[in-house]
Image (cartoon, rainbow, N blue to C red; front, side, top):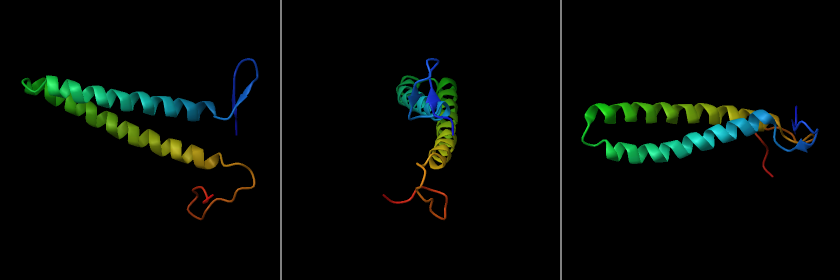
Length: 93
């Protein structure tokens, strides 16, 4: 597994892809909070409100999808010597 490296060759505990997923999930989650305010502002305009609701729902679905990918990648990055449970998830510590 590729450990995150900078151009200077330093190692970091997170793989680049894991970090990217975390950042996208965090930013999309923050956008959901903002969208709640936009929905309140659009209460008197049904067309705009419906568009905001559609965008919010899509963002929620994308966060769920990305979270599943993140869970999978984190499960694959267990430290050596730690057994995986039968379901493929992490073992209890």
